[in-house]
Amino acid sequence: MKSKKIIGLTGSIATGKSTAANIIRLLGYQVIDADKVAHELMDKGEANYNAILETFGNQILDKNGLIDRNILGEIVFSDRNKLDLLNSLTHSNIFRKINSIIEKSENEVIFIELPILFELKLQDKLSLDIDETWLVYVDYEKQLERLMTRNDLSFEQAENRINSQMDVELKRKHADVVLFNDLDINHLRKQIKKRLDIKDESSD
Image 1 (cartoon, rainbow, N blue to C red):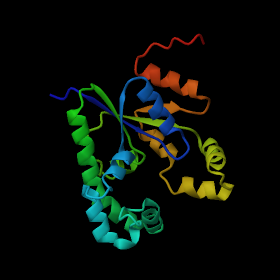
Image 2: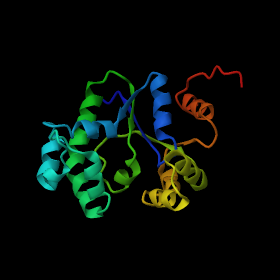
Image 3: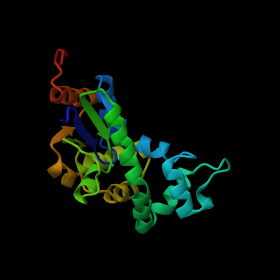
Image 4: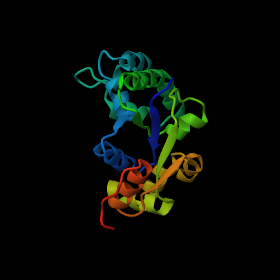
C-alpha cells in the first residue's frame, strides 16, 4: 500500500519555482531536484554519460572529458529533434533515479521539482507517480518584467524565451494547486504553509 504523498512542483521561467522549492525545504520537507538528478547522471561513468557521448560525439566534452552542458545546450536547443533525442536517451534513467530516491526515503510527503512536469504529463511521458501538482504562477507581464531584470534581457529576448516554453496559463488550467507569486516572498511562504497545514505565526 502506498504510504507516501508525491507532489510535483513546477513553474515557468522567472515565476519563482526555485524560490518556492527553497521555502519548502526550509519548512522541513524533502524536495528532489530533477535538474540536479539529470546533471548527476551526466557525470563521467554515470548512466546517461555514455548514451549522450555515443550519440553526440566528443565535441560535447571539455578538456577533462566531462560533458560540457553549455555546448550540449547549444546543440539541442537550436534543434527540436536533437532535444527530443536527448530527452529520449536520458529521461528513463532520470525517472528511475528519482523513483529510487522516493523508495528509499522515509518521508511521508516528498516534492519533486520538475520544470517540464506538464509538458511530460500531457504527452504521457512522465514515468513518476505524482499525486498532486503545484504550480508557481505569475502572469505574462510580470514574467516578462522579472526575466528582463533578472537576466538583463531586452523585451524581445525575454519574450522569445518565455514563448519557447509551454504557456503558463495552460499549466494553470492543469495544476491542482496554484501558488501566486505576484507579491513578495512572505506572500508566497504563507500560501505554501497554508497548503501544508502549517500554522502561520506572523502577526499579519
